[in-house]
Image 1 (cartoon, rainbow, N blue to C red):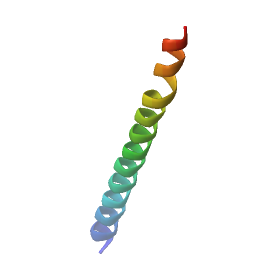
Image 2 (cartoon, rainbow, N blue to C red; image 1 turned 120 degrees about the vertical axis):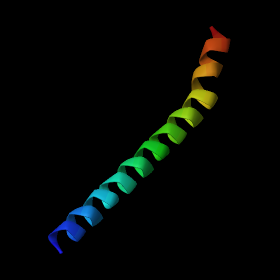
Image 3 (tube, rainbow, N blue to C red; image 1 turned 30 degrees about the vertical axis):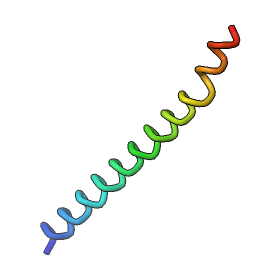
Image 4 (cartoon, rainbow, N blue to C red; image 1 turned 45 degrees about the horizontal axis):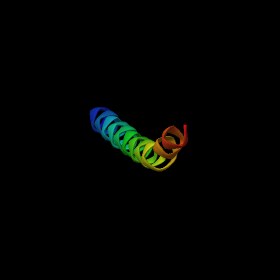
Length: 43
């Protein structure tokens, strides 16, 4: 039972970490696509 709880916690952490990385990557990609290119083109 303790092993099952540890496994569930590990799976939950992995899911949370992957979701967080996906959201950060998507936000960074949108920010890079919209903001940085326009600033570079102006200069």
